[in-house]
Amino acid sequence: MNTKFINDNFLLENKFAEELYHTYAKNQPIIDYHNHLSPQFIAEDKIFNNITNVWINGDHYKWRAMRTLGINEQFITGNGSDKDKFMNWAKTVPYTMRNPLYHWTHLELARYFGITELLNEKSAEKIYEETSAKINSPEYSTQNLLRKVNAEFVCTTEDPIDTLEFHQQIAKSSYEVKVGTAFRPDKAILIGNDGYNAYIDTLGEKAGVTINSYADLCTALRNRIDYFDKNGCKLCDHGLDQVYFENYTESEVNAIFKKKRENKDLTNEEALKFQSAILFFLFETYHEFGWVQQLHLGALRNNNARMHRILGPDTGWDSIGDYPQAQKLSGFLNALDSKDKLSKTIIYNLNPADNEVMATMIGNFNDGSVRGKVQFGSGWWFLDQKDGMTKQLNALSNMGLISCFIGMLTDSRSFLSFPRHEYFRRILCNLLGDEIKRGELPNDMEWIGKMVSDISYNNAKAYFKF
Image (cartoon, rainbow, N blue to C red; front, side, top):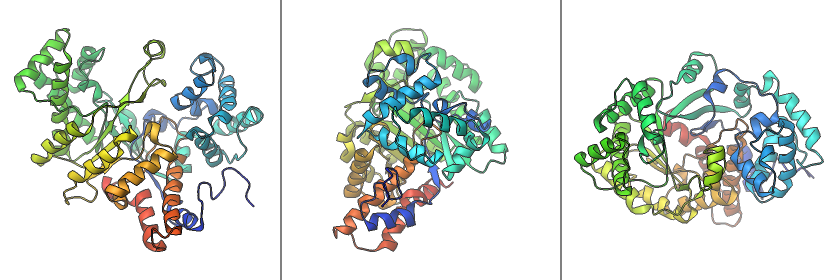
């Protein structure tokens, strides 16, 4: 009997699930079409000094857990030594049971390092030395880490002001894993943010446009879309609380932008009108370039003002928001569709209360022109765990066609996060295997296996035309 926690049949509860996973899912290549990996690290084939550098630094999932356990910030994001940070993470791991961090941690140790021992205070010293010795070698460079998981394509996420020099460097190299980028212009949209005018000045410099008017801003963004497109970009991404879709006139938007450029305060209504206008302009332009567009909706960000001042954004102070989504999203997609300018669209939802809203919304705009044209994206951020992914899969199955689903992505900053694809595939196969066992699905392994292979890999490959 296999007594290892991470074993061949981890999360697979019956023979049907086992066959689906091992025959149809396990060996499929990975298309990771949204993440926040560093293209510089890939281009330079970076080798990390130790396990902390690649595994703990930058991982706000781990940071939140450590803070909850009462660990001092010195050993999380502070000036504690790399080894001390690892030891404190190891101390935390046993307390993360039933949090996905417990599964991810042990999957990553097993898949990258061949370590199946549980991580805790007793094993920490040994595991730190073993993993750090391996990670600080050419075999564990960033490019080889992607090779280890059978990655075929990874898509990072860049701001419009990015030069894309590292993507260019990768494209000219002989590296066989394809590395793309997604255009993320949220800083140009969110006009109420601090530092907005300074950002617009930088955007203008990069785009070769002096931005004095709203029309100038649109020209600058279009120039950068064209630049990204010429560098192989075929996706955009937006991380918004909700879709903006207010009524506005051109003169109103011009006046609002001028007011902002004069460093005057805007009302909430003015900000929403401007954000609605620029978002619609961008999505019309994406359609012109034939891009796939992504909407990550529902995060309530930077809740802890004190810690945000100290550590900045993306350091673990965000949560699920409860924004109204359906009406504005419907109006926005309908306005694009009415002009025949709705591109392939992936909508990710962070509030599980809205799963059925999103699962039914996509059906409104799947017009038969493209297989799975509008997608309900995989569970992300707080929902990329067993319960969250299962709920997303169930909502999509019940109200759409899971067979057309384009599957999982990491949305991660860590080069060790790719076993999340395995995690997703095991959950998918167990869900289907359980229903075969109960007689809710036929014992047609060839057809259901094909569906598993499609969701794991084939659908994404066809959707993005990689």
